[in-house]
Amino acid sequence: MKRQFFSRTLPWPARDRGSVTVTVLVLMVVFAGLGLAMVHASGIHLKINGFRRFSTLLDCASENGLKRGLRDLSSWLEADCLLAPVPEERVEAVRTAPRQEFPRLLDAAVGSAFPRVLEETFDGMTWRSRAECGFGGLTDMSGYLRISAFLRIESSGGLLEVRPRRLSSLEGSLGFLAGRLPLAAIPLYIKGEMNDGERAAYCGENGISLPRKPGQAVGASLVTAPDGILPEDAGGLAAKALNIGIFRPGDLSPARLREALGLEISADPVPEGVYLIHNDLGLGGVFVQGDLDEIVLAIRGDAQIAVFRAQDAEWRLEWSPARSRTEFLGPEGAVSYDLVPLPILFVNGAIGALGGGAIGLDGRVEMSFDGETPAVLDGVDLTIVSADRVTIASHLILEGVRWQDGVPYSKNSEAQLVIYAAGRDVLSGEATAGGIAIAATAPDDLKVQASLTAASGGFRIDGTGKSVELLGALQADAYAGNGNRLALYRDDRAAAGEFPANAPLTADPQLAVYSLKVLTWKEY
Image 1 (cartoon, helix red, strand yellow):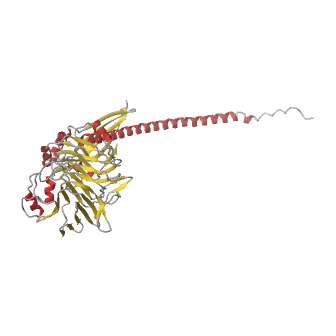
Image 2 (cartoon, rainbow, N blue to C red; image 1 turned 90 degrees about the horizontal axis):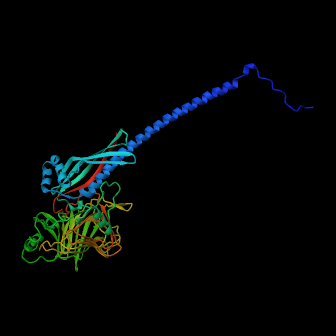
Image 3 (tube, one colour; image 1 turned 30 degrees about the horizontal axis):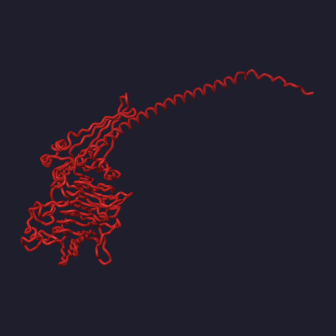
């Protein structure tokens, strides 16, 4: 019979007693040591992370100081320094002693602008930036000065109620223009007097947008002034085109004009027509007496073409800078020259339609409306002046301009176009209607790549539903969008201080900034 209970376990030998306790104690010591090591390591890790976070916050504060200082500078430039009147004697003083007189030039135009100090606090961080500007170099452009200045912004950032600070610095350059400036240097000017809020409202009400290209530190903005900007007459450009001395409208006699045009000298009025100037000095520009129905610009190979039409007559000017060859064809016949003309087309009248064109199979040049055909040859710097109104009827595209993500870039193009409506007859000196208009029949997605100046008569967009893309600049005494939209992109070459050779100049000396570049960024 089996027992209903277990037999009693025999005791362990005496030598094994207490071994479990020892093992447990050893394990407790080991795990306690590991725990203490982990606590110590965690403490070190927390301290390291704390120092790292503290350092990151200092870096962030210092970096914010530089960014905010740069933004403060660019905002000031866009608001107050894109254009400011300056006394002519200050410009001449800089011409003779640039390093000493440059600070005085800035003070005379925009007041005590430097050093610019900015102190801010945000989210437990604090920073202080200081921007300084000094003379770097000067290029005399005859009518105006192109000045390069060094820029340095220093920033110190820290945390509230904490002593340590982190330092950062930025070095760059500023580009200034001083004197009677080419109007192509002013992205958008409307005659009048407005404050910042009024300028922004004006652009919104008139459908004007000023997109900033990627990488542009200083963008285009509307500048206004009651006077001193738009030139009073186009006598200088007319004199250049005619290869004669400077004169003012009304001072040019018919006899002198006939002599410049190669006509028989008399007191009779100059016959209406298109004249290519040719004298002992070589080829001049083109002078047109009377209104034109249209001017069509086109490219054929390495040659630039300009076709002039008035009533039933047609004149065709074709020149190749590469071959130094010019052909001029009109109702009276054709002439050829182993020279190239001065690229100024001066119309002492109105231009009924101006646009880019293409050459048909029959050799006739007609306006093109595809928005892709270039109208101005790469390397041609063309200026069109009208004493009266100019109406743009089709696209005006420069060869070499490329589009990226729908944005036009002209950096790699050497073509330039200036359209200037003077609003004054060059012979009589009498005021005309003037102005520049986008025709109601122009394409709805019109592309214009030019510097446009309407000294009187304003700029307007006729028709409805238009979205005009302007790469260049616009200056006018008035603006009428009529519910249409205008997107103005600044020419990349203007941001580099490169302007058309025969652009109209401001009436009075001005100071303008044309570039802001960041060269180095250092953190200490």
